[in-house]
Length: 175
Ligand SMILES: [Zn+2]
Image (cartoon, rainbow, N blue to C red):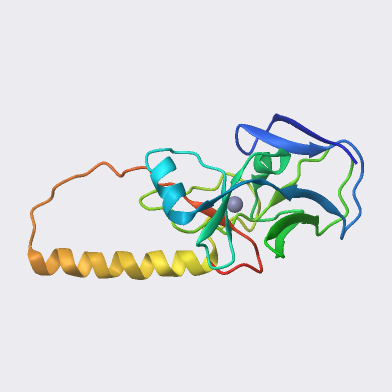
């Protein structure tokens, strides 16, 4: 099995397999230095793009430095991520032909004001790379904020949304 990084229609660079991959095969490990969430927050406060992957309850993140960090998100992915003994693996969930781009669902969380818009183009695209749980959480928070705003009768102050840094999560991870 070989992985190559080249430009992608989904986003910037993507990760492609040069050989066919059978469903159930581990294609890559998500590796990089381990940081505490606080360290990562301090490092990447104003960075629009990060390659952070949350482990367990999210208190430790992997700061991606590997081929797997280039794998793009898709709402109709051909791989998924799983956590095992504090390591993150990317596994094929479909048979993948040689030359195809590898994708997995980022299940993003903790993205601040960033909307994490998804450009995967899948028929079932949910429009954002946030996890379903995170979408619910953000909707609830927005509702709460709107209520607060109304009760305060603040006049419209338009603030440019700050770019957030979001963290990826494994399907079986916390987040
Ligand atoms: Zn999508």
